Length: 229
Image (cartoon, rainbow, N blue to C red; front, side, top):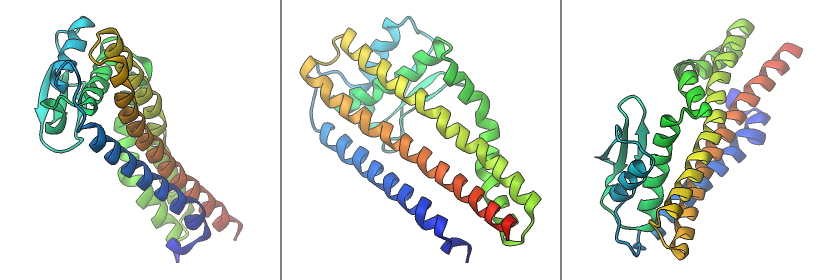
């Protein structure tokens, strides 16, 4: 009856609801402002390239990538990849998202410490994400405490990654809005729309961290309750 324990109801369900709300918010906000064009007629790709050049970054490419909201910065290849709904779009949403991903490129160029830390933690976090939870659950099911503890430790690395990601994403959005304002990419009246898109996107990272923390807390509480028994 592992999945019917009270901790699941107390922790996992509320965190999951928060995640669903955040996903709906970013989807609806992006859709709303993807229908509002900017007065300068700049595409997401135009905005990204302008921000890169004005920050003296000439070794980062801007490329289109398939999918919806698949935008990301690849530090290994030094490429800002923008989805089709951003790359060629002249909407406020597209400019905001493109500027945000370019913000990560600026972080990389400036050796922003939280970004460097996240890159260092990622390999271990990936292992923890793939194996930590199954190991902990298996240990709990068969009362194998050592395996449970190892699983919890591994999953803790994944949770740490989610937490470290928060300042990285918030800082990228702050840099994005500052660049948009400094380069007059959007008018003062239009910047509010880009901010709303980035704020909604940031909440998805907060929700993801909350879900990960809830799962970790549940595993720890179940482990302690089994020990007491």
